Amino acid sequence: MKNFLKKFTGTEAPLLTVTEAAQEKVHAVIQNEEVDIEGLRISIQGRTATAFQYSLGLATEAEEGDLVVECQHFNVLVDAASAADLGGAVIDYVDDLNASGFQIENPNTPTWDNPKAQQIQKLIDERINPAVAAHGGQVELLNVDDDAVYIEMAGGCQGCGMANVTLKHGIEAMILEAFPEIKHVIDTTDHGAGDNPYYA
Image (cartoon, rainbow, N blue to C red):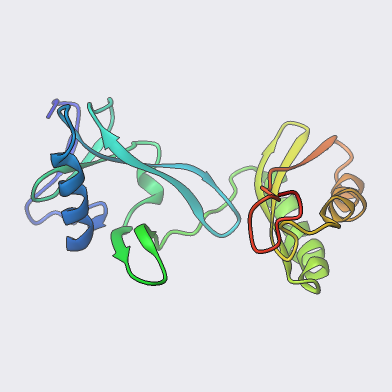
């Protein structure tokens, strides 16, 4: 490994843990690759109010600043910018009737550093979500960027024929009224997916 990588070895507590099942699956995938693999890369790509969104895949080379967790047959390359929010996380692989694939259990809870995002999150928690919960829906705040707010609808709101009405006359109206500097409320929901794909 390159000398700019920090390894977690010996008696030092690892940054994260990879279960035996996950290690076996990753090792099997690496063995089928036709190129040299430096390791399994994990990074945090986004977040909602309650969970992080991860990127997980094989890497052919390490990047400067990567933190390394050594496994039996490969290394896990942890993106330096994501490391603080991955402490104590567990990467597992599940293959049963209910689910199949990698799962990440992370004891860290996302928090907004942006004060405006904190205020908008409070509005969503206290006014918007209680209103849409009556219809089995939920709204997640994804990001606040300058004068734009990005949200995602879930539950009964995903794929609902009234989703656009809920957005324009409910969610958007509340946010714009409370925060006049916000000009756009952008719904990133895939309304063609879910149990009731209205737009499919």
